[in-house]
Length: 300
Figure 1 (tube, rainbow, N blue to C red):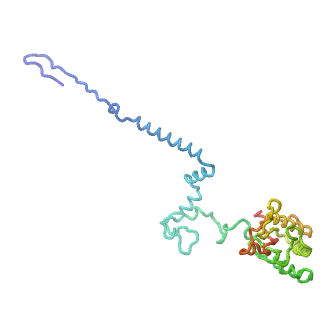
Figure 2: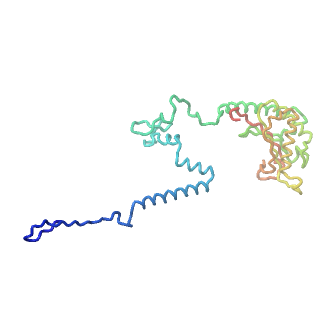
Figure 3: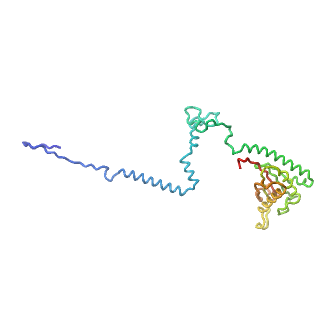
């Protein structure tokens, strides 16, 4: 600033300079370092959380977490197709949920390869399922033929005619089951043993002759009634049912059935009774020989 010179003096005016210091940042208040420090603490917290997750989860759970945060391209494409249109971007007569109007999102070319063709059932079944259906039809015809053959041999053999009611043919989801059952008047095995009575041994041999030439895998399962043994440590229904199924397998092999065709040999004791409301019924004592449906080589 400039001061006025004294009166009647011819001196130049004095110049006074006033310096004003302005402190930046408000001293100890605020500051950019706090932002950096907050970012550092947040990053450390995220790091330790990641370490905890890695230590507290198994591989399958970590895979699920990774998939959640990084969805696959296929899922992205599926979700993008026709997502904002009426009926999901499809027409009433459509089958694939793809957009049919210009304003709808998603494109068919994203998810279906060019030139792809096929019917409604393409890609919905297991490998070789069509072949398996054809083989199942053939197997059912073969089962019917075997059933008629076995029943005819039983009727034509005077010694086995009385055993006709002991044999039962049951179609199942696995194949055709041949039940060789006891009843109140007749037992296939000597009581409490794995020894076939003579007529029952002939019946097993007859069944073996009828099924020997087929290609169907075989399952043999032994069953007992619910009557218990006095000392279950020496013999029990589990041991008896397993031993009887193995004795049946041995008899079938001896009568000409190839060893390689046996897929399962099981003993289930009294756990699958034929007469459910009476587990002690003698008809629950049986051996089940099941001819299983064949599978294509692609399923093996």
